[in-house]
Image 1 (cartoon, rainbow, N blue to C red):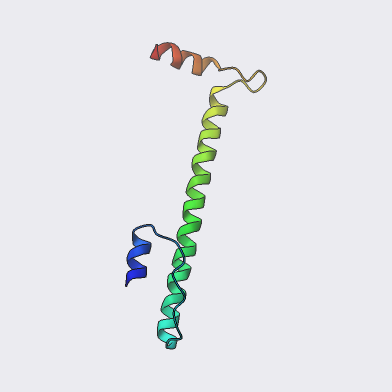
Image 2: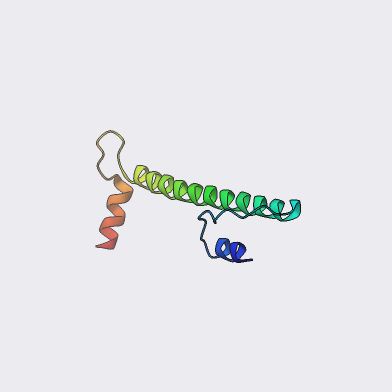
Length: 81
């Protein structure tokens, strides 16, 4: 119960090892470990998506040859000013 609550609250740290238990309880702990691994991977993918989105935004606003702001980015900056 505590492990499920910790996972739900974003705590993906590994819990202390549990003593030997029945096959049903062992399967439950294995399922919780799989859930932790999937949540960690989801967080990694979200971070990668944010990095790629920022990279794409940068590329869409700069000239590939010079690295300077392109016309659209300059117009947005002028409108903002």
